[in-house]
Every structure is written in structure tokens, then in C-alpha cells.
Image (cartoon, rainbow, N blue to C red):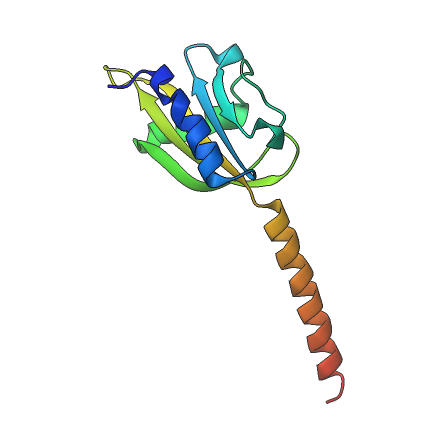
Length: 134
């Protein structure tokens, strides 16, 4: 079984591989007040190493325990800046099966949602303009 610290190199790898709009955070849940032990692209939320686990992350953790899943993927969340994210969390267990850490991936999709909304509004206007001739 891997220790939490063994996931640290994967944080930087995933951050670079997935790009600047993707924050990758590794939490050590044995120390909730300063649980962040590694982070890539933290400028998306303003979080840094030594930061606390969020209440939202704790809710996802509870859901993972309840549903007895090793991870929860592609749920919608908001980062601390209010941007909308597609998020996934992988739970790290100790040798007794207790969740002691979580590897989180948060992809900021706000610009995609804004683009979709812009295009939808344009299409509605075009449709309304063309239908006015009937």
C-alpha cells in the first residue's frame, strides 16, 4: 500500500499533463487544518501547500465512505474563486482500509460554460429573427 507522500510526484505530473485549467490537490486527512501536502496549478483557487481541507471535500469524502467507492469522478463543484469545476476525488486508504488521504482533480470549466451560453444566446437571436418572417 502506498503512503500519501508517494503520491506527491503524481500531483505535478497530472498538473502538467492536464494543463493550466486543471488544479490537482493532494490532501493528508490525518491533519485537516493543513491537509494540502502537494498542489499543482493552485493559482486556479488560490490554495497552497499547508492549506486546510475544504468542507466540500469532506462532503465528497463522506459520500465515498457511504457509497463504498474508491473514487468519485466527474461531479460539479466550485473553487474558492467561484469558478465552476468538473471534479474527481480518489481516496487513499491505509492498511486497515481507513481513508487517510484524497487526490483531487478540479478542472475549471467556467470558460466553456460561458462560451456555451454565448453561443446559445446567439442561436436564439438568429432563430427568433428568422422566425419573425413567418
